[in-house]
Each structure stands twice: as C-alpha cells, then as structure tokens.
Amino acid sequence: MNDMDDLIGKVLAGEATAQEQGEVIHWRKLSEANEKYFNQLKEIFDKAGAVPVQVDFDTDAAWNKVKDQLKKEGKVISLNKRTGFLSPLRMAAGIILLLSVGSLFYWLTAPTVQTLAVITEKTTRQDTLPDGSTAFLNKKTEIEFEYNPRAKTRRLKLKGEAYFTVKHEEEKPFIIEADEILVRDIGTEFNLKAYPEKDTIEIVVTHGEVQFYTKLDSGLNLKAGEKAIYSKRAKEFYRIEKPDTNLLAYKTKVFSFNNTDLRSVISLLNEVYNSKISLADESLYTCRLTANFKEDDPEIIVEVIAETMGLELTKKNDQLILSGKGCDN
Image 1 (cartoon, rainbow, N blue to C red):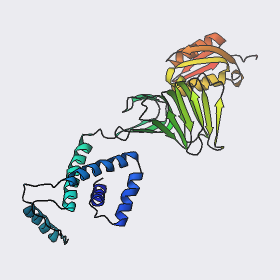
Image 2 (image 1 turned 60 degrees about the vertical axis):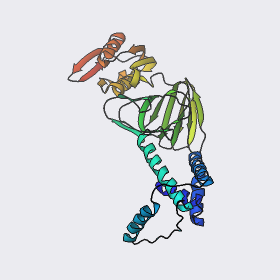
Image 3 (image 1 turned 90 degrees about the horizontal axis):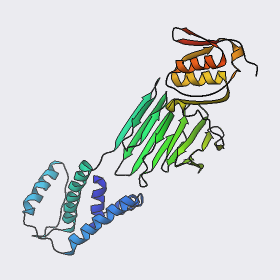
Image 4 (image 1 turned 90 degrees about the vertical axis):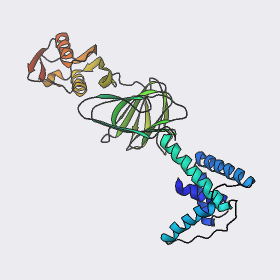
C-alpha cells in the first residue's frame, strides 16, 4: 500500500509520469475499495491546496537534514524553496506521511485475517470457524479456512467430507472450494462430500439454500431436502430425487435401513465406527434388514441385528462376526 500511496501523491501533485498515472488508473479499477480510497486522498489533497498552509516549524532545517541523508545514499533531489509555505510536492509528501501513519494505525488496529486448518484421520471432529460457523469433519478430511473481516471474504478449501452450519452474513459470502466445484452459502446447513480420489462430488442441503457450481458453469441452486452430485469426468451436474437417508450417519449416528441388504448395512457400520464387523458366510450378504437405529455403540447395533434376524454373534478380539443360515429373498 505504501508504494501506491506514493504514486497517488505524485499524481495528485502533478508530478507523476504517464506510466505512473496509468498504474494508478489501473489500480483504481481493480475494486470499489481502491476507487473510494483514491477519492478520499484526493479530497484531502484538494482541501489542503485550497488555502495557503502556514507552517510554524523550521522546514529548511528539516529539509537540509533529509538532503544530507539522501546525499549519503547517492540520491540528488532539488526543490524550489518557498519560505513559510509548502510547495505542492512537499504538501503531497506531508499528506502521504500523514496517510501512511494513519494507514499503519489502521492496519495495526483493524481485524486481521484469521485462518484455520484442520485434518482428521481416523476420527470425526467438530470445529467452530473464526467467523462463528461450524464444520463437522468426517474421517480423512482436510479443511483450510480464511476469514478476512476487512475484505469481507470467507473462503474454505475442502478435501474429504464435512457438514457445515454457516453463519450467514449477506455482505461476507461463504464460499467453499472442492476440486473444481464451488459452493456458495445462502443461509445454510449442508453436507459436502468431495474426496479427491472420487469422480463425484456430492452435496445435500438440510436447511436453507446453496449454489452448487463451477467457474465455467452456474450449476444448480439447491434448497433444504435436495441433493445433487457433480461428475468431474463428465463435467455435469445431476439433481438426485431421493437422497440416501444415511448420508449423515457419520455425524448423527442415526441409521435408517429399509429392506437394505446386510452386506451394505455392515459396510456402513464399519465405515462410520471404524469397527470390524463381518459376515461369516456369503449367503448372508443378500439378507434384507428393515430397522432404525440411533446408537453410538456399534456392538449394541450388531447384537440387535443378530437377535432380529436369528443370527449368532461371535466376538473375537476386536472383531464382531455374524453367522447363521442364509435368507430366502
């Protein structure tokens, strides 16, 4: 910012080259904040130049001291001296100094950029993000979050799966990047599954609304109860009519099985709990289970399954083995 302050001061004082003027013009066009900042400096400069500025300190002594220092550094500068009044360039330099001090004070006192990086391996984890939002991370998940209150930006990078409860702020958009996918919050709670090794990225919205898109495709707007997937290979979005009821089981520990084959049931339980449940015989794979569970102990769930389906449960070290007759489907 200091270099740009110097350039702005030279432009306002009429001392800037054509190239320097072009740099300032380009910088002003980069953002509304830059244009606003320039106009504030111009207003200060115009007011300062509207009337003679009487100074009560010894400018000659101060300027001679500066020139001595410049000579030591091998630099030569000559200025027209006006007793008792500031020349335009000196006035600009004084304004720049004042602004630089103010800018330094602002940068020291303004809220700083806040970051958070979290990695999970074998366990899930919930964290509160610096902006007050929360993220519940599944296993083998990484997030990197950057919150800049002054620039009004909230950006998060995801590798893996997480459930987000976003603190909605209209002027501070919450944007998630996952591979080529972007998710923009519109006051929302949602689950995003984006493992780098998988072709698909899945999202399900439980509250509010999100935009699910890429830089090249506006994608889909999804509301509560809706799910969609994005195929990285096909570069296509697909809206899913009936989301998997167990999609959030890793977070809620709530399971709903409706005529689900036992192989899929056991696979999900092992994924959620890091458990070692197995079926002793392949004839059990196609047995069907209809049941609901809300339980944080996989052993209790397996005991209920064994009792319900007339199977035998054997415990061997940390393994749980279900055995018995196959099922007629």
